[in-house]
Length: 189
Image (cartoon, rainbow, N blue to C red; front, side):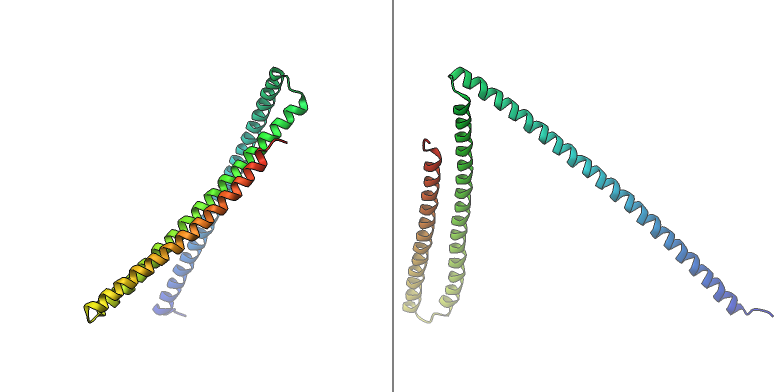
């Protein structure tokens, strides 16, 4: 039985399609395996780096602690302080440093809040001024225009005073809170 040219052509096309599909599957598998090897190598390198950094940090901290302890011991000998007095001095110094850090953080947050308040003032004033510009363009008489300008100045000044009051109150609260923390931490025990 003779096969028709169309049948032969279709078988040839099917065979070519199978070969292309097999080649694509092999390429995909190879790419997946390469990606997996690269990912594993990267993960391992990152893990080794993290372990190395952790070990370096631990060693550095231990060294700094030993040096600080020796320095404090030597200073205590020179000043004639007992072990308890030295420990108390170190604790007081540590507490003072902690309070200073907390106070600095509080002041930084306060400055950020104050900056945000002024940005809101500028933004709302700008938006109102744009609205007023449209209103000014629609004015039919000079007295209407002057009245609108006077109202704009009055509103802007009131908004400014409101923002100034808000920032002043927040500043005062932050300063009072910081002063209380510092006074409590630095008071002799």
